[in-house]
Amino acid sequence: MNGPQQPQIQLLVIQPTPFCNIDCRYCYLPDRSNKAVIAEETLRNLFAQVFASGWAAGELSIVWHAGEPMVLPIEFYRRAFRLVDELKPADLAVGHSFQTNGTLIDDKWCRFFIEHHVNIGVSIDGPKRLHDRNRVTRAGRGTFDKTVAGLRRLRDHRVPFHVISVLSSESLAVPREMFEFYIAEGISDVCFNVEETEGSHVSETFAAADIEQAYYRFLSEFWRLSAAAPGKIAFIREIDDTTRQVLRPQEARFFNQLVEPFAVTSMDWRGNIATFSPELLGLRNSDYGDFIIGNINRDRLVDMAGRAVLAKMLADIRAGVALCRERCGYFSVCGGGEPVNKLFENGSFATSETTYCRMTKMRATDLVLDRLERMRQAEAEPRGLDGVARSPVPIPSPTV
Ligand code: SF4
Image (spheres, protein in one colour):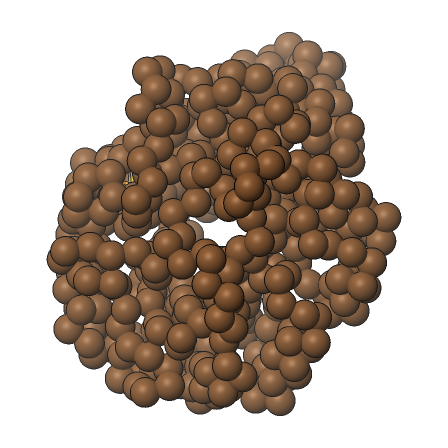
């Protein structure tokens, strides 16, 4: 690895088991029927090495993800969390998150989440007719009812959570139906993913004509509906994150953790380590093999920084970021995008634009800039985006 700076691990993504109790049609994880469970020794090796490396300072997020983390018993996580507490430096704040399909949430899990302040993300793709198209069991049955039952448990126990919804061509066409579903279920924090081309999965959504405009229209209308119903939707990741980037101070550098080695460090149940986009772990490619830079049970984490495969990936990712910097007017709010999308859409890390970035970075930024412009115009009137009269406030200048 080039440069004198030591890596900064911000996010550890851990696969406690590859097994998932459901079988989504767009899932790209090849090993999701494997019921193996990570060994406690593997976890101990990971935590001990991460903390000893000095690469995690201040705050560290640990995400338990991919397969379904809740197929393991609560006791597994009690032991794992204890291990973290035993091994971590006193001045390092560690937060735990679960990304779950929600089908296994019950009262015991809710009590555990509250006790340990676990951050919960539930994958749900909108109302039943949309969710059940893709999020199905191995027998092909929809999982909506179980996921909603899990969400309601969380709500009953006042466990804070957000949802991640994968948008398809169908859901992009019905922002009001999506909005009304979230309101009806008391969901206030939403994140939108788009069905992507990754690994063996080729996205039909990406291939649809007019997809960028459809994404823009969806977000625009969803934002308008949210603004018109204050107090219902508190957080729309695609809008809030983009707005924060657009309005950040000019001198604040954009840090894209997906292109910095080890900023996101992922480990599978065998102890294999990868970095950059977490989705890379579990995929294969002719240039980089399985993207694995070492195994925590055999190798020293600090030695992985010198691995040839990492150097090759980093050189190509940096070449891609350089192209983005040179060619793209959105670079200041994107920082060079997501390596996994460049690789699986364009065939190389050393590229720039993807369908994914045109939607989630460019069109999202256009939307925020369009709204800021309208707010400026509205300052003269003065009326807000929702048409409601309000006191004019100074609108900061965008960074783009
Ligand atoms: S929006 Fe796309 S092309 Fe522009 S910087 Fe981001 S990844 Fe690169």
